[in-house]
Image 1 (spheres, rainbow, N blue to C red):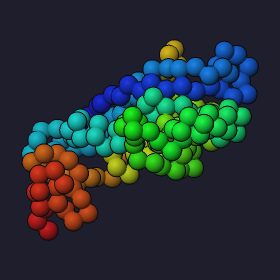
Image 2: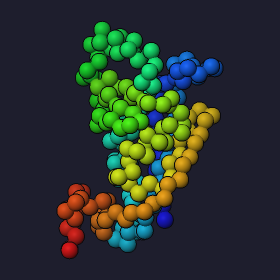
Image 3: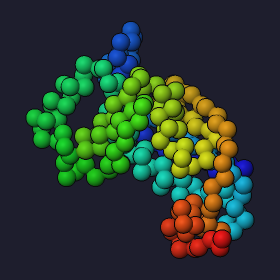
Length: 189
């Protein structure tokens, strides 16, 4: 069975090197849907609490919300960083409170202090799915990710091959010691 949750993300990007309207910096509201698959946890009668999926995923995804997403070879990147430096916001500002954890993968690097994500490939709906899966595959049993942005949409199915130990009282993932970080339940070994 699956638990499904969605996220709305506002971001700006462009398709550097593309011939068409998308070569210009522009903004979108994208909707990301994550489906998590596992057996129904009998203690709470659900696969995984959607609010816990949201908490787990949002720690990473908030880096994409109200962010500029540019490819690493885009000549706009140094220009934007220069402007941020002159404004004194390159290394953050007190108003920038919606920061996620910085991350660096083969596909993308997040710079939360300046609301910037730098990608290896052009940021398309397919590209967003690849990045999100890479960031969350070890935290959630993701069976499907769908991302829509404007008239563009992509989806990818994944084979779930692991079982995650979950708390019978609240449904969330137990830590490496078999303890629920939310309610303190301890698994008997």
